[in-house]
Length: 196
Image (cartoon, rainbow, N blue to C red; front, side):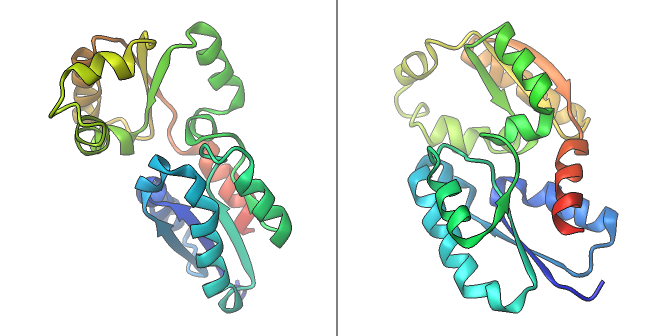
């Protein structure tokens, strides 16, 4: 394939996107990731994507945005509409990993659910415990998570080590725990449509 495709992506998806790129032998695809910590300030996401897009768009025949809405409240979609760009379906990565129907089932079962992905399990200490200053102020744990009842780990891999860590974090937060393997099927399907 001669056309060059750029995927501007959330850093939380970097590992999975590169796996899919390798599996599909997409030599014509370039992945540029933004810092996953932008999720702490979602209103900045559209501007950062715009900067990356404008700086690289002339080098590619197609650009796809590997983000969901990610808490931008529609701001990302407004930018994408202005430039005629497409993104991953759904409001967040939990839905495009699990699929819309399955995610709705999880939500209906328990509204007070904290969702984890492989990325979030790997970086839980840095992003949650340290990022929310729970390590310095343990009482914040109860304040932040008082409305949560359970953790659902939507796993992209079947790593026993990550499952053990996810269970450990559920115990730490005193939440019920559930494991669901999603794999990369839904994400891979969306990327296949975007790239091809």
